[in-house]
Image 1 (cartoon, rainbow, N blue to C red):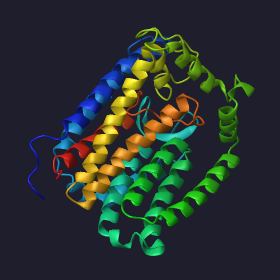
Image 2: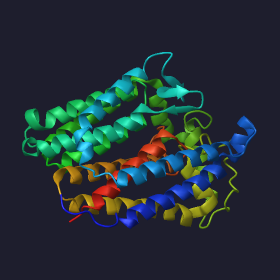
Image 3: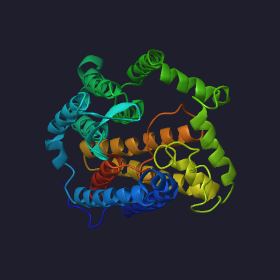
Length: 365
């Protein structure tokens, strides 16, 4: 490796920190009413968010100063640990059920979500594997099939929880790495058709997923059931207008909009800060993705390039799904908005990943 630059990409760092600050403020605004009603403390959720933000910033600073190729040595071990955690969380009495999914490990209100670790673990492993086997990626059985089987196994374990949102992000980021490594478009197209068929099977196999699809297509057919979340989200976005109702003045957070501090926090952003505020948040994400792609293109080696595109893809896919759900473009899935939504392991892991991206940028050509 060549000599590291004195500073990492300051635009990536600034965008991430600005999103984090906006997130802490919006978590307070979105959750104050709910927190006071449930815990008698309006600051309950924002205090937790501030703690995890501080931990995440510490992790980001650490990973930004650890040479990224070090992670290549531990990619296999990391993936193995992630698979073990996904197995443990499925054990009744150990895995904690929240929101209908057995996705958490922990005690009381504090816990970790193994699927979040798997997303980063899979990105690291695929970047290592495909950087070493890139010449074989155009061959289906020897090059493309092994990473697909590993990705499919991780997706399968996540769906046993079940957590379609996290599984979709994992698959999206993984396929982006595989495509960037040089996989043939014909192979990926065939895989896409098989994926659509599998997705339809998952929907038909679970009645609640079918209700989410019908609620997405026509939320007014069941306004108090499957269409409730989308309708209330649109009720929040509509009145926001150009400049919003003002910070802290949301009406939908008063027990109308479910999960206002997590999955649907962007609805509160649009309601309180309006089109301008919502567009500003999307603009920050766009800048972050642009600089992430630039970092991937200018990385010194294939591992760094694939790792950067995987991290950038993870952010981009998660943002597109979350905001797509909020504005009614996609069916409802339980997935947070990076840096903005209330969350522990999701926020900390995302900032850790950004730190790795920052370190790659220090070695850009």
